Image 1 (cartoon, rainbow, N blue to C red):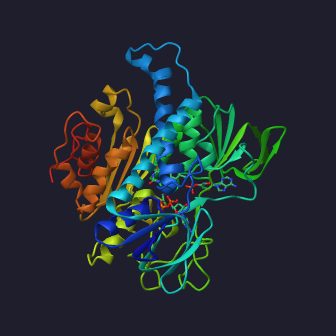
Image 2: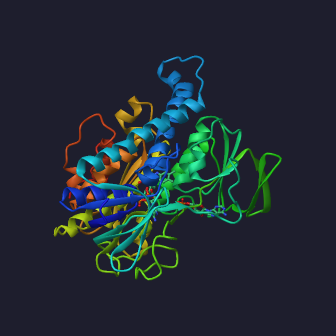
Image 3: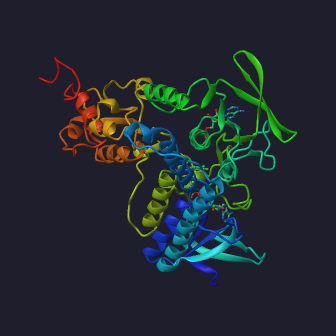
Length: 480
Ligand code: FAD
Ligand code: AMP
């Protein structure tokens, strides 16, 4: 093992591994240090996203959705299925296989691209040095011309609900249940709480989600949030807003939870409780006291718009810096830093980061909401289109939700696109592309979409901004 590199990356989640691979592709001698160990105790690459986040949660969301379809909805379209049952350990084992395949893929990409894989812990010292300790406890000091910090994030804990064996768990534990808990509590109706609550509700749990805020998904468009809440409640998710959990304890093999809502103190008992109250940056032991890198009060590494810290040569990307905690945001930052080190000048457009919640229907958006824009004093015009009027959605028996397009009232420039509906995660990509190219609603309206597709709802919503939607009744519109 060399002790000198052009670039050392600490953390091999989507931000770190993307940075490391791109650095190596650009000709830098690159090493990537990651401390994660998989279920079998062996080092794994891919970070939270591949091991305990995006991928395993989507494997269980997709599997549980297929179960619900087979059990409940195939009959609606003339397919009778008898004796549908689930094998939870098999579902979890298959999820593990998907994870294994993908994390192994990163190992192969490191090898193929010439990234030196250093399993163990890294800490940034002063003077572009990194203290490296491998899993056997051997320590060494490495030096680099550039260091990229990509230490990611970990689940937030709250004193009111300390984790307990496999009864009070965080998002990682919630991906490992071997049986379906009959009564499942979830603290937090954020993205992770809704996704994990949906998985276990679909598999048969009675799920109560306790959320301290009065508003549901405050970051989403109000109409979309309202419709999503109604639909998710209709699926049996008992979402209680304005319910602040004050205590949770294990007694007699059950979890007793106390919370306060508008009517006073309440108590509920569950078989399992998932704590999904957010994530915090994983920067506790990442920086030596004299590293010189600034950290804010919440533990985020301070960086400029190009992810440079205050120390020349040191960068930070992904969940450990400001901005949404999303895999694709971190990966784009990692690639941006690699390319800037090679002399190119890319930038991340933080105004076009797509957000997706993988419930069913999915919720996705890019840009700003009508409410945010109103607060900023920006006049807008909007168009929306329901999937109930989409031929493809109706043909697929999957027609809940809508697309809403928000454009500047004067310039017609797209400012936000909001989707609740089937495959919203895919449809939103079209909105991201349009906004990345600074398109107007009219540009989207003049674009030809294949028929019949779910994306036509985006087309019609964009046409609707100018009063030109075809599959809507609008007698006065469109002579301008
Ligand atoms: P991480 O993926 O957290 O990786 C950081 C790595 O650095 C880890 O392996 C860690 O062990 C390692 N590390 C930390 N400190 C050190 C050190 N000192 N030395 C060596 N190694 C170190 N995002 C999405 O975009 N889409 C989704 O669908 C989605 N679903 C999610 C579902 C769940 C249940 C969870 C928990 C998260 C989900 N996320 C999703 C968020 C996503 O996982 C994160 O935004 C993403 O993983 C952040 O990438 P990162 O590279 O910054 O950090
Ligand atoms: P997110 O950060 O999107 O994952 O969402 C986490 C959610 O958990 C937020 O909406 C918080 O309001 C909520 N939350 C945090 N602490 C509590 C608590 N003690 N009781 C209920 N909800 C909480």
